[in-house]
Length: 248
Ligand code: RET
Image (tube, rainbow, N blue to C red; front, side):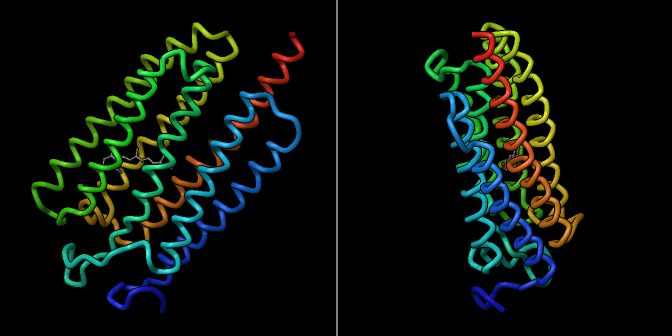
């Protein structure tokens, strides 16, 4: 028993939150190891981004696992539901960082298309904040679906930014950059698409899934989107830097 007394402490949910915290700590350690030693500016950028994505998520999972990252809401069934607001705090920091990383892969310098890059980051923040409103609003209410649709519309703008602006910039940067960008953008687009699906099916949406599968699904997605993707992106950026150095 930990955290505020009104919270329903489900031990299996808690186990998933601890798995998330440990996975993010391991993820941060992995970034430290891969990024160790002399770095090019490009590698340094990705190293710092992916390291801090893992550290931010680690804090978020830690506050959820210790009982203070959720509020208990009375809606969503006879016993109410725990709403994990800490996820949205995490996502509001980490999703812009991941998109910045992808933008840097595409254009190397953030100043080349800085307004477009900022536009993508703003659309992303808008998606997370309106998603928070969707999560907070009562299960079954009309406003929940209003916010959900607004958030999905912002998500569509993020996709347009990635597959429109970023992709065309990547082609101008180099063959290498375009190819790595394509791989990263494909993984990111596919993994991110599953978040609104989990929201829809889980305790914040239709309650088709209970709190255990919802927590498990978000944790697994976060591990793939942050640790898996981050590790791949950093390793590939390092390889690309080595090839560029060798080519002069
Ligand atoms: C919400 C609910 C409302 C509709 C949409 C959503 C999208 C969330 C996304 C989250 C991505 C998170 C990542 C975290 C860790 O790295 C807020 C679930 C569209 C895309 C990648």
